[in-house]
Amino acid sequence: VELTDADLSRATGWEKNNPIGQTITGAVLGEGDFSGTNFCANDMRACNFSYSNLTRCQFTLANLTKARFIGADLKNATFEGAKLI
Image (cartoon, rainbow, N blue to C red; front, top):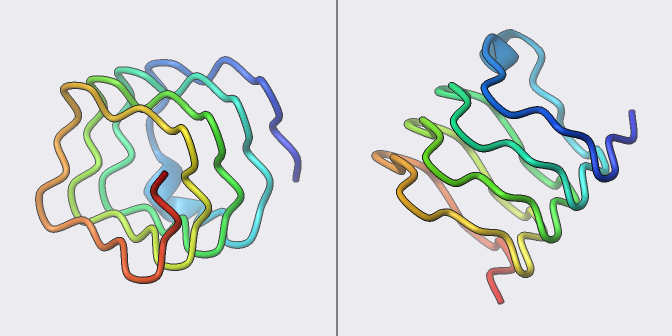
């Protein structure tokens, strides 16, 4: 799956999909409910997660270069080995 520059704002239900190892660069994911989603090893450069619910999300080994998390709920989110520049 490649979701480059997709507008997925206000999305819900991702915890069932677990898009591991996918390319989701430049996507707008603002104001969505992604709680419990496994984004491990995804290429998520320049994604906008502003004001999203990201509680319990796993971003282990994800490339989050230039990603935005303004106002996002990151309680218990995991970023081990993630690229955060």
